[in-house]
Length: 123
Image (cartoon, rainbow, N blue to C red):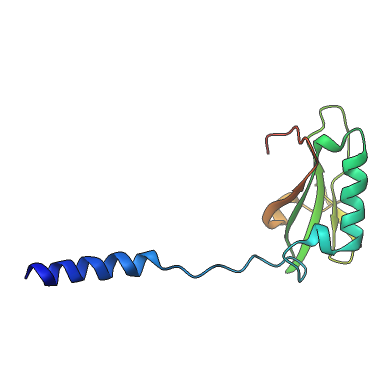
């Protein structure tokens, strides 16, 4: 009986100990869109080299069943518009209400994919 209990516990531990490696989430067909999408790579480099680069970050999400990117910031002195970009770099619109923009609540599954060097925000 002792051996049976030991075998059951051992099999239980081993069954929970094994986990397949998860594939990284693909955004616009790549696991690293900032490195692999030329327009986004250029944008990130230019932001990083700018004075305000420490405030900028890029998010990826879904808008109307397509993957999108948003260039955001937490700059306390900037009055910027957040644009929504398609995978190819085309502007789909900007965040806003009053029927003039894309409602931020329509962006789903949004995650941060890039932050500037020395990122100063707490998002």
